[in-house]
Image (cartoon, rainbow, N blue to C red):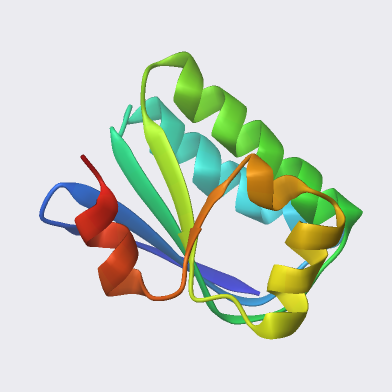
Length: 111
């Protein structure tokens, strides 16, 4: 698993590669914590290169969302495979997270 963080204009984009699971969640959380410490107002997690997400990964994402909202920031997710999008729908997390089909759509949808 790798995660790369880039600032594009006013949006901070986290590019995750690999699985988001019980083994990688602690490392992902460390990266997300650095984003939170910077109080980035607009954050996007790009799932284009994510193959698998388990319950630990989902919990990490929910905690990330909660912490960003605590300081008034916004978090969006984008570019999910149909399998991962289905996981968010089954768990009803698609109601909690804003999920865009593509990175460009997500970036322009930030108010």
